[in-house]
Length: 486
Image (cartoon, rainbow, N blue to C red; front, side, top):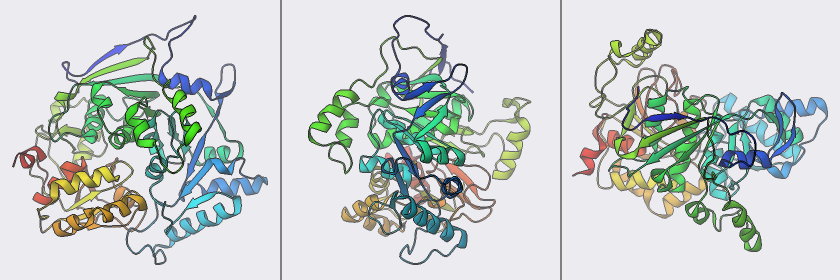
């Protein structure tokens, strides 16, 4: 699907020879190349390696088999997030597999000398939330994790991407990876967002336009006045879902908003080190004349609150739109489209407004930061949830949870009938105790709506925290702008 007024692409040729104007990606990439192999990948240095309980056990076992130590343990940060329960975290984990996963991470970190923010630690939380809030994530870095949504950290002007378990082992052993340079794409979002439209809507809109595979093979830089106007937490939401359109990573140039966010955080540079870091960070932007293999232009005012209707994040529409008719789908895509709608129990050509919702999940590495919780609390204050909807609010970290309690946000949720749980990945994925029952509809602020993603046969609508909060109050998918007008 495309809209010629708001969505245009322009193919650029790679600049060859002579002095080059560099993109943000190229500036960081070239600084981290250890060795270039003719006709092959490069040896690429990694500044920071985040690990969690799901993709690290096999990597540590590989090191043990080879008699290797972790090469630079001080550059590795570990936390437990995917398998942890979000209620009664002081008790033993009930699910056996989850308990074993978390226990194994604890044992491996102790054995290999790695800092672990495990259950009960004041810094525990979702890996892609604790890195930025602690100041571990810093502009100009290269960051990896055995988790696809590592692209979140790109909001700070980093090259950040997910890796497989064998690559986790490689980084633990060498602090390097073999990498080929991706193609470059820039997505410019210009103008002012309308009322009720937030960063989650921007990225869902982009994915709906270019599809869930539209950025495959690219490193994406987000630019334009609408992007620059966003807070750091909103920028993280944008970069987080770069993976949902197939991108290798997503990134945004650091600016004064970035520096203000970072100043004074636990592991951010201090004193003279801060001044030195700032001098470098201010160079991290695409030069005028930098070349991209593909460039897209989007008008912010054309974006409305978004909602997905299918089983991949590209199957999304504006809240006033309709699910495509069969004749609007290509012959090639028709079988998967029909299968997806059958799974979701949705008919072609219908609108999403008025669709009943059973569960509301506000959380995940996409939307579980304090700003997200404040946004929801501001909207629901003085309101009550629909009686037949269960609402889970899951903070992204112990620090987010602590701030929510200190500022009384938890009380607002309680009065609205919402449950503020404890930090973890929760119902983003069916890997812990927080699963959506079969056949039930959940409007979710997470990043994926695949079949069974939130539990066997669960049905997921992806949306922004505002749109999810509106569904919690009304019991159905609705246009949050109509409630904001009241």
